[in-house]
Length: 278
Image (tube, rainbow, N blue to C red; front, side, top):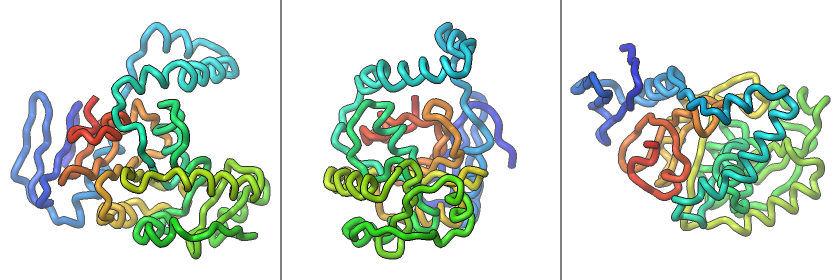
């Protein structure tokens, strides 16, 4: 079945019926096997991408030389806009875990908040991240130790030219690709782990495979199904690793349903039911 238009795709909690909503069309009563639901949702999320509004400011920014454009963008995005983005944020003491840098950028940098998660500037191999979450209470209490080589040969090849620390919690590898030394890594991991709010946890899973080093070994459908089965209340899957928080479609796994909608970080953190509506 082919879908088109600016719409949302909703699965009922029983996993058997779905409704495709738009201004002009509504399809209901279709039945699918449970194993196919999530795969279809991922395909739906990847098939459409939001186009941000081009204001006079964005047009002016796009006309600047690349170096100046990056500087101006960072000043605006991380210096001036965070306070404006936080104006509707009620839940300010949260912890977001992610298998790569998206938690740090989307939940903390863009809102101008102090890191309350250790998953900043790093990535997990996909299977290790799901394993970490499946036994979260055990792994998060394990001491961080460091390895000379990764279990991934592709990572080992990459680190020959761009070395970075590889750590582990028991048998779960963590790749600190934005850190310079093991001592820096250990200090920041320990400090940020102490800030975790275990009563207000949010979890992100970013895929699918691409040429990016932090998306190696991602088997989106199988690992996403394991992610879906996790007992956490607040979970989102971001199928496109290069999407921005203003153009991303996410698979929302909260409130007893599974939905694909445009993402809104503040509403998700506030725990609102329609967490992805703008």
